[in-house]
Image (tube, rainbow, N blue to C red; front, side, top):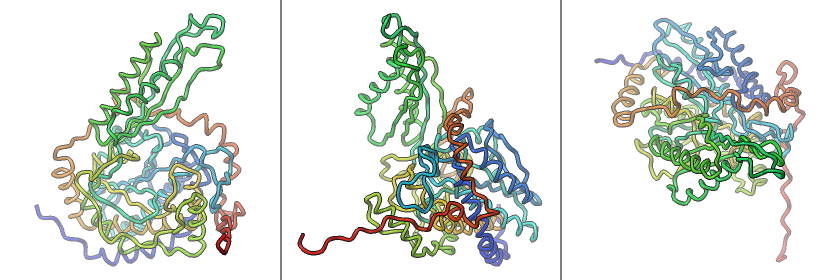
Length: 522
């Protein structure tokens, strides 16, 4: 089959797109700041949904809410002509518990004490996608370019509990390429094995029998004892697991009060390994330990509920190659002295070398068909989409190097010029890559050739979630019910303030002064 050559309009349209995205720098800033101000946790992203869908509906996108059985999920779709190719654009929107901090302040200074915050930086990626999509949509309309743009949010990514359900619901059944974005401190893309961990998130619920803990404790069967024995059993087993695995847990239900033997208790595990078989093996080990804990306590392992999951991603080489060229065109943002001062201030605060922000993009595109020297690490449920449709993740520079992640420190740049400039650079790369896919049919055909004949030649996707598993939409409801009344006082009002920093009255940047070092031999 002969594939059509790239459209001769492409170079000129790319020049226009760069100028048009730059002209929407203010919109990028407003979206970044607005989502930061909501500070919503997974499955509770109501304000984010309302704001983004209202914006996109005004731009002519068809909105569908509550997709895949997730009330806060949504899609925004716009098509022209044949509607092909269809390109999906996704980015996560949820925050981190207890990560509240004032933006632009280089030390711990929470907006709401123990409140949630954007300590992962998920407030910036939608600004990137929305602005790129609006610009490309305008060019498609004017120049009669066939295609479909499908925007969607990564719901509850921190619980790894959204994207597998989107896949199962068929959201991407007509998609040709997915362009995902994630906050970083660099501007880059990779192909092949992602290096992330596959994951199963599961809650083990035990049921026993209550009794007076002092009057007749022998008549009770403690579900909490089973939970604690499962945790202890896992710690003993941990020594005999692969070094690459990651596993961690919290006890969400440990009983009601000390003088009542707990009749119910639960423990929530994350099991992470390199791939589907190894992660399932970890999960099966956990289930056996849970059964043993129940036997030791004469309790019952009542429910093993999968709350979330994700494959380790594999990214499209042809799409990454096209995006990498656009990254070279756009380059890193120009950081000013204030940006560098904030970065160096928080690096010193955390006892890290204060080298500030990076200023150069990698010239070489990196990637490998198989994991190289894989030693485990974090996860992202974009893997479930990447094993169903050619996908890449664009990393964009809105955060600061050498921070711990999932921490208040990672929130401090996310409503500042650092985040605004980084998201704007990412929007330019995204717009250029959209045009490549729309006007160069070879990108799409090569992407599917790689997907079918390389990526999935020997590895076939099967979901971790079972047919009976449903999205755990109750997660974080109690936390947001507690903190939302306080957070609402800080919602951004762009009609009154140019930036969120201005609304909060924060001088940018605010960092601790550098202590003078004593002179002389002493």
